[in-house]
Length: 242
Image (cartoon, rainbow, N blue to C red):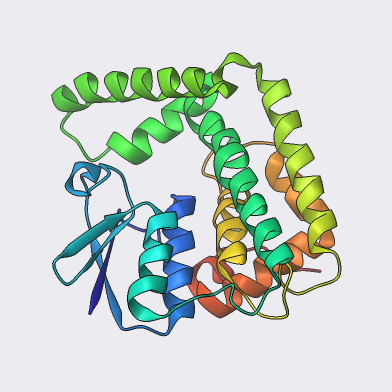
């Protein structure tokens, strides 16, 4: 039995972490038996971040290495039916989503001044005031330092959202009229894209990116399709099409 460790999941969202939503979908697609366990402290994971899994005596962190572990140890290869060209393109799509669009999402939550009080309450509102007053500013400083080191934290808000919109436009072109990316059935590529798009749409802070995703009918339909199949809690919270 695989144990999937993730932070608490909001009732109306797949997960506030795109990577947790991604891994949840991958595990569902794998057909393997697994159970979910809530963890508050990411330092319990082997990479000191979430999500991570326990499989027997092994603890594996980072969704890329978890997917490789599932392939090597359980024969789960969600990209096996794709051509080598499409496998390579799929990995490039995932890299763009996880190394660029993801940081646009993080920027919206931690870098935009008017959004920080919302996120502070979500992440630290359960703490006693004394602890919160010490830990929340430290976390904010750490995240903004990480965003600056990554590069996106050096941009203005409009510049950052422009970068996000361009990636969303590209994803719409790549999806085209298919139900899923590069395939007639969902793969880890779709899990990666969905994890970020659902968090842009159901982001607890306001941004223009939610409407930008929904302005692309194929991406909006993609999010609805995946939500209905894998994340019914998120599906129920999505606005119904007119």
